[in-house]
Image (cartoon, rainbow, N blue to C red; front, side):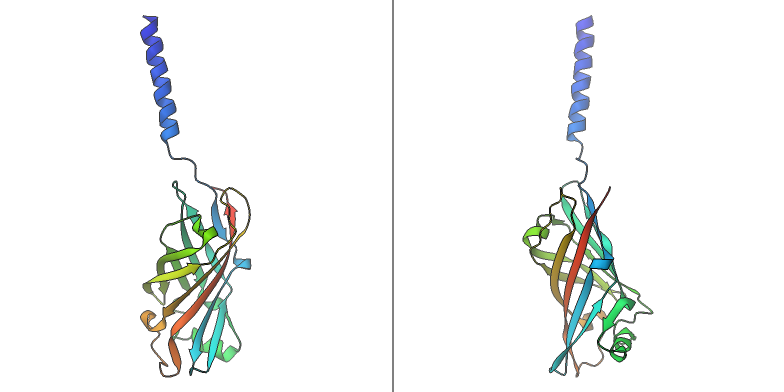
Length: 194
């Protein structure tokens, strides 16, 4: 009788071990955006002669890794953190015709899941951009970077993209300003414990 009990005990132990091994592995470290080292820039052509540029200095958010190693970027930009060459231009783009920063204080980008290796090799980063309360598909080109998920280091990620400002309700001044707005992101990612 002791042999069936021992066999049952051994089978139970093996089953438990199999369940533990089959369970999803613990996630790698997630990342948070270091606001002090990150910014977002934009440029739009004025009268087809020069480009007006601005820079947002407050970006928060994180990159979360799931159990399969896929990363999702969630970045939030404070609209009022914009810096421009002159106060007059800054007031102009903060007004309701453009960013309408009082009504819509946050610009948000939420990506589709990507492999973490894309942060190293570069590639296409697609997702949804919410600006002025309007959400539209957005596509960024990730530039190659040096990021290793198993090493505690700061990853500097660069991305480029463009959008149609009229798609986000910024339809004024069409004779003076180009509809296409060029975007550039420099994001510093740091490990955070799970």
